Length: 391
Ligand SMILES: *[C@@H]1O[C@H](CO)[C@@H](O)[C@H](O)[C@H]1NC(C)=O
Ligand SMILES: *[C@@H]1O[C@H](CO)[C@@H](O)[C@H](O)[C@H]1NC(C)=O
Ligand SMILES: *[C@@H]1O[C@H](CO)[C@@H](O)[C@H](O)[C@H]1NC(C)=O
Ligand SMILES: *[C@@H]1O[C@H](CO)[C@@H](O)[C@H](O)[C@H]1NC(C)=O
Ligand SMILES: *[C@@H]1O[C@H](CO)[C@@H](O)[C@H](O)[C@H]1NC(C)=O
Image (cartoon, rainbow, N blue to C red):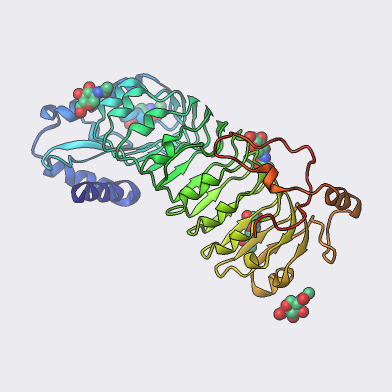
């Protein structure tokens, strides 16, 4: 553990402090006792990178122009470090081609780079699917493939990486359901927004270690299951923007006591805001914009101690409790436009609001069962609950 931490710390220095990179690389070169030709790991890396270069079809910044010959540690974007198991041997420990605009594939021989701890390929044009051989990267800690053109079902191969903590697959074209195992892995951050994924929280998963989960802008549908509470011990940011969510917000969201950011905007959520949200003592940002919430904005939410920004615009709220009517005076960014609030400016028309008031929602009829993938379809449309369903 200590060894791998040192390894990652060293890599962070290599990769994140760009001005240090060349110096660090040079000193590493000097300290190595073996020439690259006798280092079997670097020879394998050479084979892998040669194969990779063959399937790079466009490299407008000429980043791989110097990917020639066996000295892979001097290639642009390739970072070497002493092997965690043998400090006298250099291995390829990181790849950083972020913002390279490179078009190509990720070929099978990438699996030969078995000491990689970091892969940063964000903002390129890599297409196709992830090779199965990635499963060989047992030290891989950070995998950032965001903003590429990767396709196919969710790449299960990432779930077999025992050291992975940071998984960023956003802005690709992965489609289909999220595998339950994604949430049982010891990941710290999961970014899957802006793909074509179709299922939301899997029905059965035992718990998760993730502190950041971003699902926004997928083709999800259905409701948020009560099992969301299994994220409670770690989850700090939950972004479910524009995810085709319907049904009521389950009171279990209020069990996510570590949440700092909860963004449910641009969905079709109905019913009241569960009073349990008043338990989110660390919540700084709550965004419920553009849903079909009805009823009262509960006082408990408005007096949350860490709250900085509350957006409830574009819903059907008809009442704000107590101090909720005057949050801006307490320095909280607050937007309650386009609701059915009697004494506030810029609200919906009385006609629209009355139509909604005539069709109450009972959240007990819309329970998002952990057994069923979706709620029963709402026939009444946006409507109002007769009382607080979740007190
Ligand atoms: C790309 O880089 C290589 C090595 O740095 C250089 O030899 C080559 O001339 C470059 N190609 C272009 C088109 O700039
Ligand atoms: C996995 O890595 C080892 C070296 O550590 C290598 O010999 C083997 O060929 C690799 N397997 C794949 C599938 O790339
Ligand atoms: C919501 O996501 C869809 C793709 O799933 C996208 O076309 C649309 O522009 C998004 N809407 C907003 C408001 O971001
Ligand atoms: C408050 O949050 C909303 C929605 O997330 C955002 O659009 C707005 O800019 C934020 N306001 C401030 C002052 O941060
Ligand atoms: C809001 O609160 C401020 C400061 O407490 C007060 O001066 C103002 O009159 C209040 N406005 C309303 C509409 O209650």
